[in-house]
Image 1 (spheres, rainbow, N blue to C red):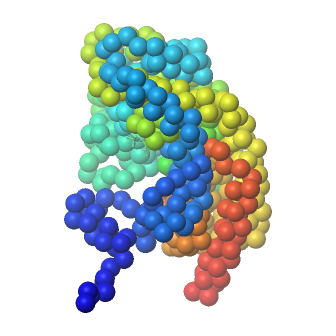
Image 2: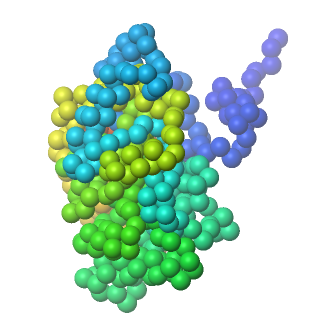
Image 3: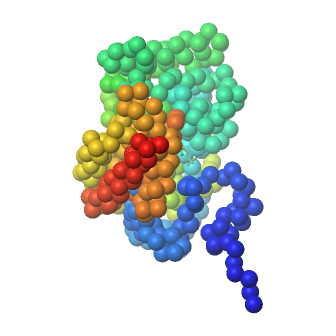
Length: 440
Ligand code: PMP
């Protein structure tokens, strides 16, 4: 007679994973989720349970989007080579991509990850300016290569920061700066950038530029004070630096009104980096920049990326653009985004646990606080909420310095009927967690 198994298949898989990947490779949820299939905004686990995906932005035009799968299959069955041969796909794709930017951002270079794109952007900025110093926010994540990790102030031990990197406080109109009036906030944050530029000069480190996500997404999708980006950009340019906009998370119409998050402001970056949603899960990323910057950099340093911009990658990228345009997904991000935001604000009136709701297209941040007056981050409750939501078949996550901000960022085909499922489930979970908070 066989012994009854002591572990579930998911526990066995977890044990094997720890053996081969180690215990520190990140996993979501107290009880990790074992997914086997995806379709549109839905994900299915090994038992067939269906989850509404309100988290993943990489499957931008929907999990396993048939248009993307078909384009990938068709090109993979025809030809896949690197970019040292002439091929239509990379030309057609980068022409179409750069047309979504301001005229000055006329050229592109393709990579496989957002980290590589940011690395390339740093190299270009340092080459162009002859400088080294880079300014970021004090809770920044821009990727995982050595040079990009060096500018990552968010998840890095202090000791790894170098003299080439300086940070300014996240511009946050919810918490602000103590003693600074709301209308002075933009200037107060800009003054921190000015100070960093001066410090670089005093330390003999020439300035190269500022690299920020224009949505401040990893920082918590903040409502930044009006005028901040315009003033900060002018200051950076005046000091001889470049503005690098990291649109790896914020781009490709996520914010609805515009293709790119920086287009919400009256600014034009010098370099923009792209990734995540670009290939709907296929590793496609890149840089769109001023032509003079790309030409000067590539003349000086040969840049070749074996897998960047292959015919298959570009066919996939094209299919993502097709889906965005033909299915009117930017318009959907505005209309469904407004619908979700209104529902979240309705929940805010019911639950003091919600300190602020922020939204931009189909990207939402729900700032949780244990007390709306002190604005104490509700970290424990945020974790409890995402786990309870998962149990009730809705996937969300957290962001921000204290991990107390709910991050909602569904695939772009998200519809009001999906929003109703999200809002109904969140209402139930908030009710439960709010009661737990009151009753300790
Ligand atoms: N920039 C931002 C803003 C990101 O959120 C990320 C990934 N989380 C990256 C860059 C790095 O992209 P990748 O993981 O593709 O290297």
